Image: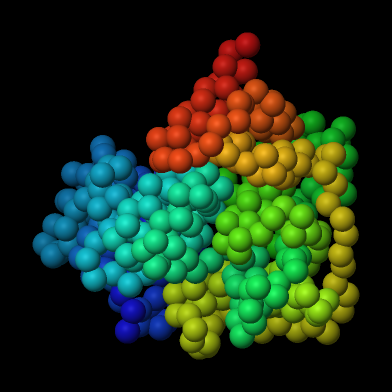
Length: 381
Ligand code: NDP
Ligand code: MG
């Protein structure tokens, strides 16, 4: 039986991971959340965890109260999050927090020698070099949870990654696929949050509407599978049935299909290499009837273009576009900026960031801070 810890247990991925853990009797040793102390406490009680961590320090005493009379130890703040990520006796740490705040805990877990199930793509976008180098050194495995990357990982099983020619990264296209910029100027938060195929946390749902999410996934794929930008083709596939595909040197293409339900990739990451039952619906190809494939529109969805440009140039630039996007999405969700401002700010930040190599965590944090400051300065200006 495997023992796991979950950072971001109260979120969309975190709650689904707990359903998987319950269904397959995976032991949960520790949970961490941002500020949703009530849900965290009820999860901690249900799964009888050793540690519960609330990142928001001001909620620590409330968590203590809610868990009084239980053996669960309470942790809090950034330090608590790092401790939760690197506990003894944990086989896999599922990182399902949102944003680049997930990077440092990932590094801590790898340092400890704990395998990672990675949903938090911002970890690899901002610190891909640090994470993959350390994982290699520590012989730690990174199991992708993101559905496209899980698909690629699944397609590679039984094959030699050296024979991989390229990957086909599928994209749903989000709620605004087919629209031009002029039609998107007055998009509301509610419209942007209405994703056609997936139910997810707010930040990634906005990223899916701008196609920033596909840009982040492009970068994530490069680090996970050691690819060059020229080895990734993005294909818009509205139905989200083909979760991605790989093409080998002989031009054979292998794809992974399934209903759009994150429990499948979460479960594969946590139970690899086992294939056990999953309480999702079954895929009926005849019910879909037709699957469609189109090219992405890089002009309308400039965040996608910015991510590819950033990672092609490399260094700190992916961390810069990510930082600008995190800040811009926060402002958009708060009603402070318009939908198209997100792309403007991400592209503006990329233009205004000077290339630097990333060698340390401090390099990433510095770039991230500068990118956020760039966005905030544009707000004032
Ligand atoms: P949610 O917003 O639903 O959940 C985020 C989780 O992170 C919550 O538990 C939240 O706690 C916690 N959190 C937020 N800020 C902090 C912080 N500073 N410290 C510690 N914990 C924090 O996001 P999702 O579950 O949708 O996404 C999580 C990650 O997985 C993202 O990186 C996303 O891109 C990726 N992903 C998600 C998919 C999905 O289907 N949802 C699919 C593929 C990838 P609280 O509730 O207390 O605020
Ligand atoms: Mg995805």
